[in-house]
Length: 454
Image 1 (tube, helix red, strand yellow):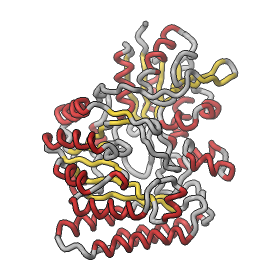
Image 2 (cartoon, helix red, strand yellow):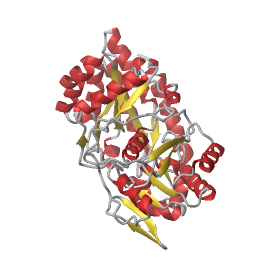
Image 3 (tube, one colour):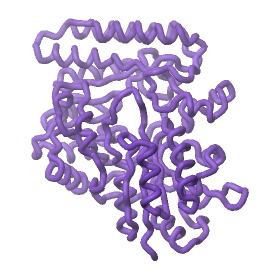
Image 4 (cartoon, one colour):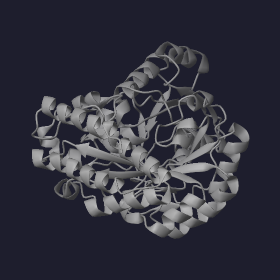
């Protein structure tokens, strides 16, 4: 097979804040391509201009351009595909990632310049794609593909999830140093002062079905990397890049407590501080004690609402009681809780929104019982972290979008409305509450939680 000269494009997610996460998924794709004999260059839209991209295309003579990004990157991906075909008509344009997985066939209609889309995880699909490009073969045998065949849009073998992803992704060739400048988060004192925060994914998939979420890495079936592979990656990051804080990017790190303890035992040996995401239903006093002793600094919780009715609509499979207990136990373990709230769900009433304050008040009354300086400081930081009050947003690919689609603008208009923004900004209102009222409620709630002091 001939060497395929490839350019991989990382799309910028939002304009409201600087890029904090280096393109982890694209690093995996690049590694797979290099192992198959392709040459790989990267273009990062967070730092390079459109003019820069055009010049690179003119000089590069690339056979394949791969564009990746979340649902919020639709206008950028459309623009880059158009520029690619304008500058280099013979170059194959492939897309993958969150947008490709969420929109699928419709994306090829919206962006005619796309030749092929890879749905799901690409480790198995990419070798087949490179062979097809090299030998000018049909894309029919490429797993997880959606492509053009004449005037028709055709699917390959369907969605594909990788079973083996033990390889540590190399970050060579990426300008990740610039991400370290923005890598700290105001979630806890340690992560806020971290100078070189690294991201690590130890598993793929999620067993839960939250109504507003689109999960690129699969539902129900959770696939785990070996602990040895995880620690090999952390060793690589610390030695090559001087990483001083690890953010584990798993959907629910503590869902498998046995495995969480195995990783924790190894993390304790590194001396690094680290943080995770978890569901409130996955924590108890013992696991929180164990991960704290191993260096766990914060836990990001998707509490999502203080309203029992709204939690049911979201299909969260949790209650305000389990959320309260997770917050309380985290404080008492000395781990900073990072909870969030979503308002403006479809069919949500003013009463449901007001129930968030009842939940806050319950936490405040608990906070006032704390006597130690450390517990009070952890509680204070955790409560103020509720300041991330998000709007329910019908991202294409989610059940929320499908359920409310008939009342929404056309797909492309929705994609343009959510472009380069996160859910902290109201873009597409699915509730019956007027936009201005919903924004007022967010401002009021943010002021309340961020202004509270014990």
